[in-house]
Image 1 (spheres, one colour):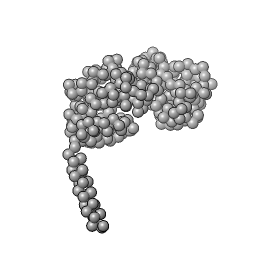
Image 2 (tube, rainbow, N blue to C red):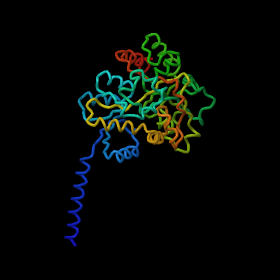
Image 3 (spheres, rainbow, N blue to C red):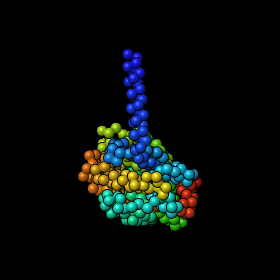
Image 4 (tube, rainbow, N blue to C red):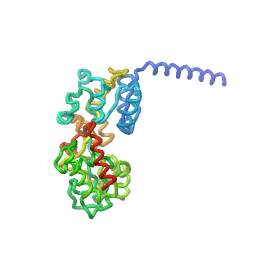
Length: 346
């Protein structure tokens, strides 16, 4: 009996070795993406279709991703930077030009979105992965009869029951568009007026600026109004409580938006497979799975709406008036100086 098990054990080892050898000969696509931003079933479907392996690495911020690449990290095929960092990476020659003939599903990209991508208008270096925006979350059980615009933060009766994001581009951007200015303005007079609006009318009513815990705080009832990403808040609420508790809106004056794009690194070892991956993601049936996974509204690939099975947390049209946060270059420091006054001086 022992000899039998030893024989089976040896056969198993051989089988495992053959499997390992087989797997080692598979192509591997190295993807560097945001945490919790890649649905597993989409990855598995891609691996099966192309008989390959997708090796996923994650980062939590553009800064983390960019710093790692600048420090010499290599071997990645695809990265997913947001618009301002994509712009920087294009200027530094870090990204390879995408062969559109290998990405026929580019035809599904929303033409209205292309108009917003001023740093890469022909989508030469990045194919949109997701376009989204922060907005305002209101607990309908705690607040009634409120304006659906940025002036809600002027409500003195809600003092210490509201938060705004601890993010200078988001908050300063909101103030700029509320005043009728360009969200990416670096004009000193306009930046000063934006600072005054925040410091004199919004900040006095805020409990704090909060970029990390606003979702949990809203769900626990600590705050009635939060500026932030609705998917973060909804993710903290019981699914059957979302509709009766949460009202989310993006003011008609607009606000800051973001766009993460699928980009191929200049030194990518598997460029053909990288093109296949980008094309696969933009297949409407596959993109719908991505939308369903996060309950995102679809601004990138309208054709995918035919295949989605979930209701988005808000309508994509609410982002029509939003503006991408562009790379401010050397003016970023100026922007930061006004924000520092808001945060620590006023």
